Image (cartoon, rainbow over all chains, first blue to last red; front, side, top):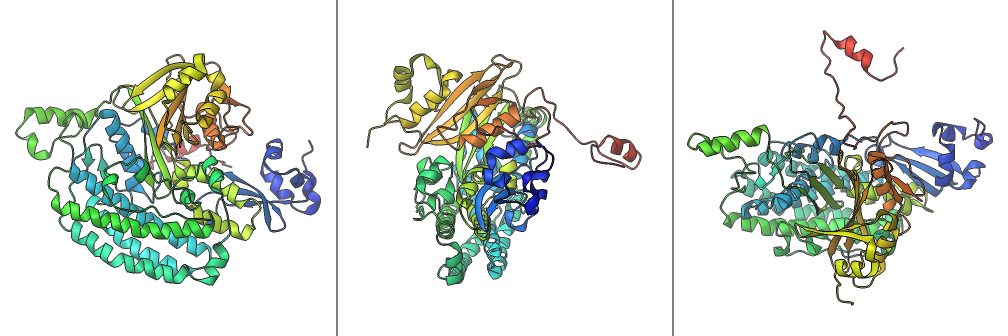
Length: 426
Length: 173
């Protein structure tokens, strides 16, 4: 094959020559028309503000219509799964925060649940309530960033500023409990790192009293806004059958009307005892996915309100008392030789887990977040694998939705799927 | 609606010698199957009434180096109708980890298989476009394998800045 591709005459030669050395590969990915210059290849990203990170898309365009869309990921691959194999189980929690940086508590939670399942470790009730509460706060936090950036992409700047203002309150609560605004590492195997401080309950209550009015404010700006409806309804439609076949989960799947929420289907951390509804869309377009997430704000607030009432009544330990996995508190070290031994063992070599493999999944703000944990009986994970929603959505949902749509709508589609590239590339 | 059926009993009855082993651990069922017949097995679990594992959550590749068989693939299936999970596991030898692709059964297997290829070097026959997904195309080796060393960056101080800078793989004059 000659060096210069055929489409040079139409003036787009840079596109194929940049996809260096893989013209053969390209043949299966784009339509044959791209090689005759009939359609145009356009590179979008990785440094594009609307790709929410470093997503690269190779677009084949026929005029303004997207003929095919090939995602190229891996720009943010940090080898977290590999690095975790070299750390003890407890050390590796810090890495899970860094995957999906908008959902740090959820990532901690799925990894801790996997350890707890493998070790058959109990979690005290108080810790379970705090976990649910913080996981829902994280969901609101993540949805706020989604709402802000999605609207910014579509030209509604003011919503972004409002969303960031509310998010600041949540980050303050995270800082209050864990000392960190984003990379909290607050959930530990068997419970929590520390008990929540006294000012926690008033702060969360202040937030949930303040926040529902703000959701209404966003809704008055968007839900019936004709400009917003024009840009979102009927765009990026995915049928329920396709959504399941392409592995969509979370609001992306529920926007198509499939009622599947892991909090309801396979409850964890006592979600079955909370009252909440699963909002569903109908048409599977950008607007329905947007609407589902807007309703999830309200459902999360409902769960948080119930969790707060329970937390006020529930006293007791915030972490399991099983000393084989959980280090003793400082106060015990002066009195008990047993505690000193456990302390030393746990902070030097860590705990070991029984040989075997488990698979645990939770409902993250983006969809099904699962952790596969395999142990060889040692003190370090033998293999950790995360099934991250962003990875599946980027590779499957976005090309499927973008096909045969307009290039101007692609930005809305990417926003509506709500991907985080740290989650995608791990 | 058809009442839920036991996947293990039904698989043993219908797939016979394709089922090599059944493991129950922590409430999770794992069915070990023959890698050559993986497409047939997956189709069976997806289409049989009473099972209907229509959703493929994940494909995880595991490296048991230095044990033999070295590699394993875990297919995590989910049945939306009966809200339960199932793990199908295949073992693959170290010298030629190769098995048929299941992209014809679940389109979402496409990128999961590409990830397994990229990270572990497992070859999926019949995959439409088996290329690297997370690592750059010219990368050598498969990083998630146990015999692949964990890399690290040496810390540069003022006394050894140039020495370490020489070893770094970016373009210099």
